[in-house]
Image (cartoon, rainbow, N blue to C red):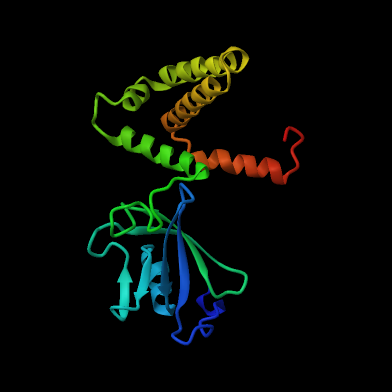
Length: 207
């Protein structure tokens, strides 16, 4: 568990440190809040992100009224030990306006994979028999695998014969179907990312 005493709580006269919250699955920055020692201690204890509300002058657990809690995953201090980056898994929109992030709904390319992965997981747990994603998953590895083969072939054909835009479109189809296959096998995309990191840090010749 993180040692709270190592943080520079005296940097600000009110004993609060700023906290940036990032979605652990999509890398989207969700919000900025403030914590004192007690708030961080409560977060680490309950695994639910808890702030100190400067307006209410008390601890405030995110989602205590809306239900849109932030499930704590990890916490990293910055180099000066006076700011925290918390990675969390949101239980709903983070902003009181209804947007996923307090910084708006603009989606960066790097966030798209995580958001799509989460959407596929929601389709998997739904009872919607009309969902294309759900039908693929119900078809098992044979159905999912066949679509990956098909889309991979179409990407190559588009690159050879059909131009940039068609290649982009077919690549998007391939990526979606690959993510569905990973879900069917209950393999988190983060495991694929970790393997890429391992290869890069190990100086893999294939990279």
